[in-house]
Image (cartoon, rainbow, N blue to C red; front, side, top):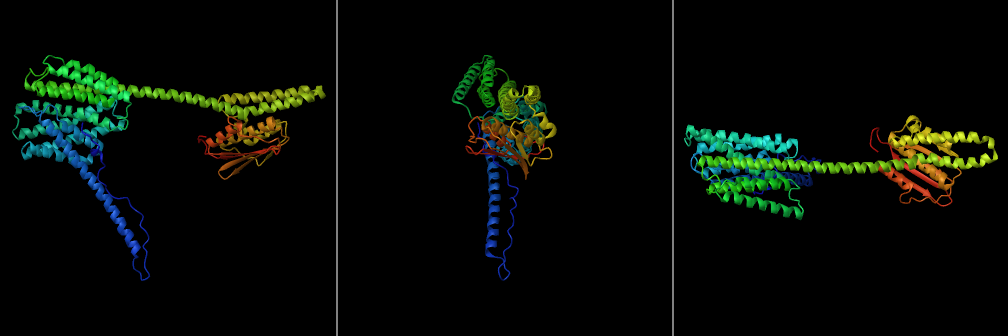
Length: 549
């Protein structure tokens, strides 16, 4: 198989990128400074060097394509037959299509040069050579244009639609070459009128088969992951290709009709190997079919020359196309299975993420109400003993607060933030929190309007966690809450006069707060000395409405 990395070199450089012109530095006498002149000369030399390098790469690419085209043509000439048939397959067309498809249409002169040199070496008349060269170049260009429209634009080549599009593009290009070639040879008197249709058919099938054998394999070869295989896959591929070789030897070593023996091996290659392996297997089977026919071996040697060539060409086209179609179906199935596995993984990750979100929101939000209610009930228990008549009022207030906590839990379970936060904003929620708190909460610099949803929710959870910690762990006597918009952020400050000594332990609520804030680009600061209270400060960026937090 020809290595086509050289054919993929970029085309000519159309022009260097513009560079910023430095200001002209003048000398004391009004002349241009030597440093400025030197910079201009260096910049011009650099642009010239880049342009020269691009032209050289372009020339090398054209020569490489012409050389490969001519080499495969010479190889094909070893398969010549007498009469209207030139070759069973015309491999140069596959080389030209693959080269222009991967390297760009601007490499078409490589096909032209290669074809002219080939025709010159075959001693064709000049007029016929020029017409055939024009037809072969036009064939390659038409096939590449259709390949890009039918295959490249619609996604991966290793699909059933991609294989069909490749076959249509190659067939259309081959029809152009066969038509022009038959006209040229008819004008030159090389074939008679009765031979035009058989010649056209042989020409078309030869070009179609040659391109179908080479183009899919070369295109698949350029895929970055095509050669990245585990040792077990490499061993399996070698075994399957060995089976293809053995089956081909059996099919073409005898004159008995054993061509069907090859198809199970090709099916195995299409199922077990990837698209590239299947294309290589089809090329191996095609090579044995050509070799057998040329050497008068196999099931086609007993028929007439014209019919034997036709049967061999049809075998190559049908076997290759069928193998590629099955390989494409298996590739699509493999991609579907990979997509389903990735989808299941995303669902599991989404479920785990939602579970963590719900747990974090419960910890940072609804727990504050329940913790405050627990502290309040403990205080009310002592008051009831002192004033039994006021117990009913205390229980009624506790029931009302418990109902609000249940409403918040329902909202969190449905993925929403606390209802009061959505309805009235952060300031109203903090006022409500202060009214329910058994410990005085002083508020300062509250926002007078709704903040963006992400910033408002983050600020609420910071305040709820800080107040809960002050009530539950610090046993604070007073809490101070401040919310200030500063530039493009909201600064939340919660301090208490409790026991202090809070630490950001793994898995703690403070660590959860930090994770929440860092996820939206914010930050958290905790200052807590034993006996000196705790201060929690958070910086929350104000994201535009609808931005993901």
